[in-house]
Image (tube, rainbow, N blue to C red; front, side, top):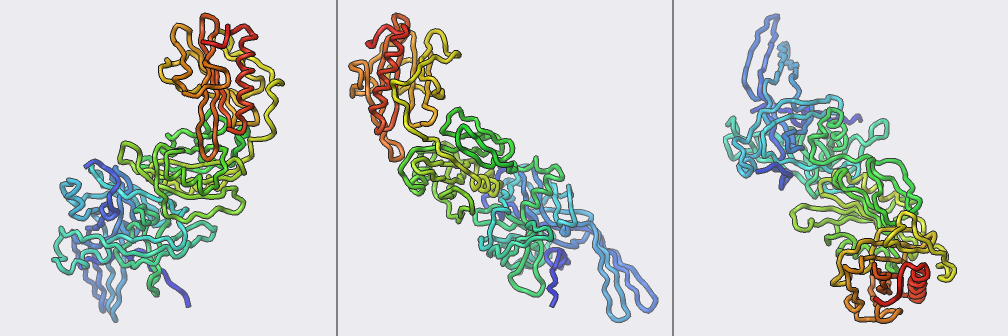
Length: 574
């Protein structure tokens, strides 16, 4: 038995009997599309013919939804095509009916129009672009203060995902409690619950339709299929004629391609990301596929960070030294401000690691930006390298993240890492000391040769002015030991180690010691102030894990001794 699909005419083309922002509800931006035009009828019977003309009549209705605050509406091509012909026979009588569209209107439901201060619920619409093969069209309604439905990412949806279908089935006929023939009546939008039951591919293996269980009827075509967060993941198109609960929607990513091909992507409130090839960041021991235009800007070996401007999304990866499990790190990342300046809540989404991925745990969270009402989303992955972990996350506005969900998740799934902690620390007595050429001159700080310079400064102690020079360095195969220094003109500062900490350090009254814990690891800071003759004061400090505290104390003593031996500094006491 051959299964037939019902296209446009079956679903939607039925005979007629504030400041712009994302809509609070998709229903507020789902529009009733009304086609007004002429009907030309030619009747033949027994060799005789007669014609009838009807002008300025409603010849069909359908659905659409605003996708841009600039007033662009997405719908089906068959909802707004300019003409349609039918041949009806009844015995020897034949009638050829031609419908021709003269005007298209897009109408918001009245309560939504009133809430937005719109002068009228209906706008004259013009077809900006259409594609009969894809059965997609874009209307332009202009105006201002127009709410829109934010777009999701159909490549990220899976079978079983709950979804709502919005639209105007049967047009005004559903308003059985009102005078449905009134020309100015805009019916209320119909929402039917359901789920994505299957993902249907074309002959090339590309995702072509989302099969859904929602109840669809003539008039639904062109309406949005939205996920439980209100993001459009499809454009409703058709249903099977001989089945109940089997309908189809065009994936929203196909609509994105269509908008881009017509140059309309620039009118969208979110920018689309494209995933590039695999990139190895060798010196940081990390590799992954980055979206085009993304690049690491962090000067730190243990961190990767990209600029948030492309697509309002940023990637951050921290390499941490921690005995915590990936689940414990997830709790710190989501529920506290340990990694991000805002605490978020877990999103109830099912994301499984992919075969071959190093990610031990992946997930998603959401929250509000500090000091604003802007919704944020975070998709994250934790790669377990033993004592080291990679804590990776994409963070951005909720709209931008939803728009690019599959790109973000594919990038995280590709994340690979290598250990940076390799080998023992070189004995302090074997270190060779040098002053980087770029730092030569007043305030130059000697560092162990071969150590890696990174931005950083010692602990901020109360009462100290901003230093003239700061420096920091770590061993080539370690990031749990850090040397940090600051230099001031002697006249600008009177150092007081007691202001830094009540605990004395390993080098007497001019020294101090601090302890702190981070991600389950105890750290010690051993610091000292020294006077460089009469001209300068320097703060030297070594941070290390508690396990390496003895090494850190020896390193700090050798650092001070080296500086004094080179004649740069006159003594240990300030």
